[in-house]
Length: 263
Image 1 (cartoon, rainbow, N blue to C red):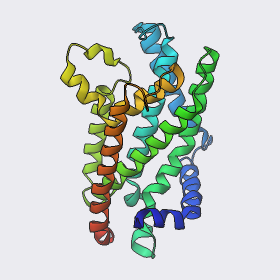
Image 2: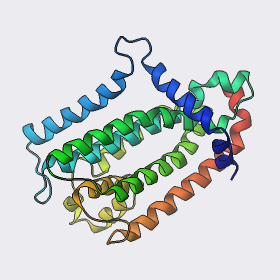
Image 3: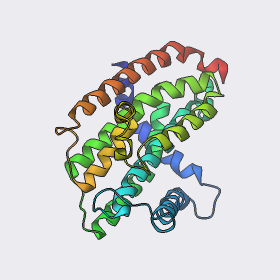
Image 4: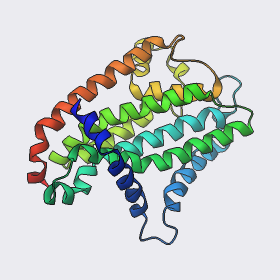
């Protein structure tokens, strides 16, 4: 496919610009890139304190609440930040689109690479915390979930980056939609709470966000969503991801020639 060939051909440029993008976000601050790691870390700790010690929210089963909660929250931060950054990336790099001959297809990938540095940090944090409680990750499952997450991110932001470029207000709408997904995805609540509503439960289980959040928890708490009871949801996840990519790729390619005119 043309998109994959373009990314592979320009992989060194994507990596280099991605690193520069991450550094430039905090270039004007005294702590620099440290803020990129400090902000999500404080966010996670705050949620743990509120839900575990203030609201005293129990974890399902006999698992420590921190080990059950942190992986899902960390992966959500990875997904949310990557989507929001990549969706607005073409507008942020408008000077490249308008002034030079540049492979526009790789611009959202630059933002995904930039966000991946914080992603690695968050994965390291939840691995360390879980290890303290005696829960070590299933490395095979961890690799699978991260690959699945980035495949979904590439597919989803292929669509959202094109629409945000053409319709700037879409960025605000996307922010609202992501907030709704946060509350309707089992991040701070458990799927067993919906057992009395089987149809709603099935719908939520079929969403890519729920699949990934459930998967990252099983990385640390045990289970194999690839081949066990959740195999059907694995198929659904990849079908949805492929369809989103095909639709997003169509929208991107169809409107790519107009990006310079609207920026």
